[in-house]
Length: 226
Image (tube, rainbow, N blue to C red; front, top):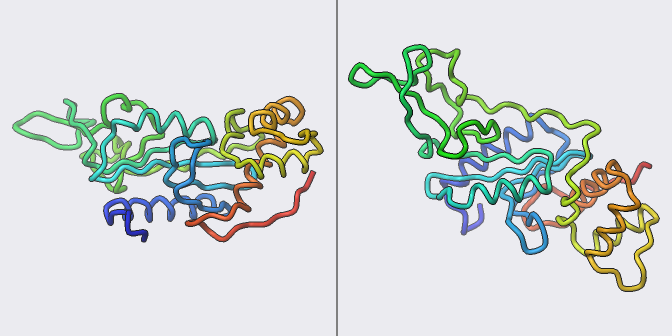
């Protein structure tokens, strides 16, 4: 574990990676990747051949003041943007006997996601464990598998996650002209105009699976199938 990473974060990260490997066994796991040029850093990313899952981790030592902007940044480059929060961030709300997580002084209460994320099903709680008195209402206990995204294009902003050389290689791969001194912006515009959402999505995943990263699974070098 890198020296800058706390054991509190590492525990959650290990659980997230285990979960991703279970549900996306063919995906490449990458740690600490920028969402765009100089943008927010994504804690964990799973990159399959045509699907990206991005995860933000909040340990007991973190704060939630940037979570909203981090979620928005992840949604710009991934099919799924997930936040995994330590249970210390749960809030207590009045409840009834059926939906309660605990009883105190004759009144019933339940745990809920923090303010602003009450109804966000992409905000998960660590650890995964039973909390409700009635198992039928234990909606925070288990992380749901992200729905597969077949035939779904990444957001057009996802191209911003690629480096200059990766954009150029992708243009060349798709026979898209770049000119003599292309900029990132010009290549992104050309790709958006001349390539299909399918090719862009597969191209981004192809590039990220092959990228040399400081902390990640070994690079996956694959041929390009039209």
